[in-house]
Length: 633
Image (tube, rainbow, N blue to C red):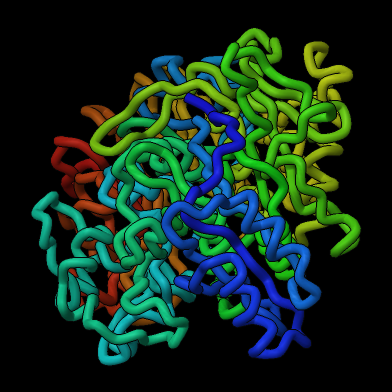
């Protein structure tokens, strides 16, 4: 699947922008001259709207654009171009070696031409719910089991009567679907679609949430998770599949034991649908989608809106679209775009010679740096994909784009195209932003500086390089985790984690496995570690002489934002805790689609479980954890 580049124009509409000084009489004269009437306006830049003008039946768009453009009161007139869609984890498609695009040269499985995302995961970089990206596409399957927790929930549109009652269970200072799936908020949501979880489909069919009120006053009523600019409603569900596929590459939930993993495991996805079920849309829809994301960024005080993913293209240069990209850049938003998949012959084109939009836009003259990042596609052998466009001055870098497995509505599929390469880069940007909080210009510079030299891209892209996620994360400054200590000489292997979320797998022998470092005082606060013994009689450490691990010390919170998931606990294994049996409660639960026995620290020491107790561990699977499986220090 990939971009279908075209010069098609919407035959019934054009885009028109008047100069600020044009009088009402001047404007009416132009509309009468071209035989049209305004049916939409958007892209407000502080002075003037862009108008979408519907032409009289039988009118010629080209003639109308020329006639309007010659009028002194007109800033520009242009067609409304038709564009088209391009098309260490325990997640099965990754562990089965079916996600080469996420692999690194040192990961298991390994591919040196993968994005190296797996090595970033192993180093503790899995993203943050405090970062959001916009998926400008065909929509998103917001009910998908690998995506639903990472769908953005518009904080301004949460009904006023619910806001003060909702509990931020993971302590990230925002209400997300992770919070809505916690028991503390069960009174305020319902599983309307009966799929066993709380997702956007439930909120969009619950009158307590979809209440008909424009809570945030942005002119989009009930825009709880984004907007559908095709049907002009609040339900951006994907009826094509393309947007869901790009979303999964960016931010499918990793470490949840199902499906696939995105480059980042917890970044928020803002679904902005402007392409219809056939994968087609018009420039004006893209402009409105971009402006929605820019406005959300400007209004946000707690989420970093870092980039939009634009796996689509076609048509010619559009001033309206360029201006929208510039508005985003001024709000520190990067515009990541597919380089294109060549012409009808399926052979990639040189974008230096024949411009591909939107990847050929450049914002340097307007904002001082180029917010547009064009992405070519490479194969699993490091070759430039046969279909991929390229350009030594117009395409920044390459990324995995052939046979890429990801989410689609209701399941999973593998697609190929620069559409598939682009979200690898968007995900990397979100991962880096979560670790650094860097501005857009810095992120772009570090992204390109860290890319890996690739023979097939020499002279084909600006850098001659391919995406290297781990190389990028190594530029995150002092946040790079220290190397693990060498194993001891005893008969048991000790394995330690870092201060970030880790995925740790032990040896086939007896191991002592800790998700936190051997020294220090942070003790897992703010991280979710995934631990596997991998055979032998293992001890999983949830506390030691330093104290209780994964205790965020926040009173009256269940502490589900930091804990250790023990994925293969079996007979002979033990859980190590600080204190005595009376300090803990065991309770069955399901969190983030993982079921098992939760180990709770009894924070209020009432010797019974309640919502104040701190979740520090989840022993997944059918094993029934008892006090006999616990040891204390």
